[in-house]
Image 1 (cartoon, one colour):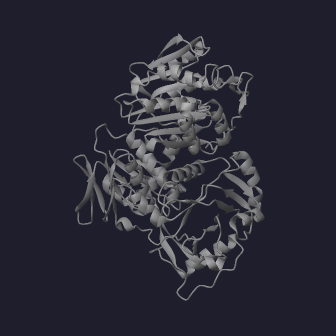
Image 2 (cartoon, rainbow, N blue to C red):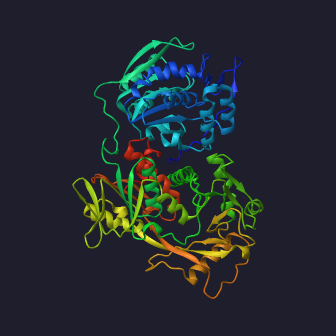
Length: 621
């Protein structure tokens, strides 16, 4: 992100003398005296020709400026639910600079949501995210309804949205108090997302706004107002305005994908596509057993950076997406949200944490600074220094997690070693070393970690166009299992920093990890075990137990690393139907679900769950 990072400023629940919810900061009300439900129906739904316009469509996308209390979203959801001819999928993108906290929103909805929408309001509250800047993808109705919430200033977020919008609900505070929400530049940027037949509706009828909408490509009309407004404005995209670019599969194309690789990258893509109704064939040299058999536990902990840079934003989005995607899996496969104590590297860095948190202004319930005593109390073991506590730090169990993802209905996992990909007759063909075809599909996803560059080269005739992928390398690494009994039961939460120690699983605590450049093989070694024990002892004050003669058990594997340590996720330019999901480095489980949904959303023509600049940062390169 640019140095001009601006933290979120949450909304404050307030009411005027007549009981209307108001924003003192903008000198305006959240909805008129007639109420938000009436405004939603008469201005936004009827003004956009809904529900009629979405009928006979497979999907429909609405973009809203100003989420507020969410009452327009609830009204739209109710209308979609009640329409027997509704589209199969409804997508809503909404931008809000000043979101309410969950508890404040709960109180506001209890007071203002109509009784017929209370169940929907409860479902919204159950998924309401912490107040962190960026995009948050929420899913309802088994994934048939998505809400992509953008927390941040519209003038910063809208240019970074990737969506194809069918209808706009323009619902910011009045131009007099919030001119940035109605600027010609912002309305033009919104118009660039419009589908050819997009419509808009707003309670605002100011002449400058109507002229800006016309300049943005809409034919606008002023209509008689409702709820105390003299007029409202509606509009339709003018002829000749083109749709937003899309990587979606053509309508009617077979929804079958071939995924090469059954590790965190491939399994995440397979689940995301299968949940969208795709048939997925996964090819992995180890079959469904996978390379992570014996890998007892791993951690997902987001990064923090003072400027909230791309890596920090991506790691936060990845961790939150993994939690949303995986928390409903069977017990052993679901992540354990135990929290992470991130120990500062040294006293100087510990002293700088307060300034970091003050700059970011993230919710204290999501991240807070802890001293050594507080960290020790959280961990249940003596921690050497203070640091940060991230409440959503997750422990994952790789083997059952990957097995559950690959058992998603619609996924078939086959054992096979893919040596090359070749295009022919509208399909991608995966072939072994003897040239035999193992499987074919219209869409192929290369997700085989360090083997991805060679497979891409076989499909595209070389890596000249992708210098970063050409410089990919494999790093060997191992983790060590220590008996929890020898550590007083082990930590209650993840303890990380220069290395990590994880809470006990099946009587063992996992300590990690090593990074070995230029290794010929990845294996459990005495030197690696000593390194992992040393890292754990540098975080926690304990006496490492003496190893048995054969050494402690452990697990060894490979990391695929690209320059910059960001993954490569997205469509391969110039190779129709070919996609990449690789280069996850040491954050395979942090990127897994997010990358799957990025590819799934692009193939389905959904609003993207990441901003354009982040999509560019992780695109094939």
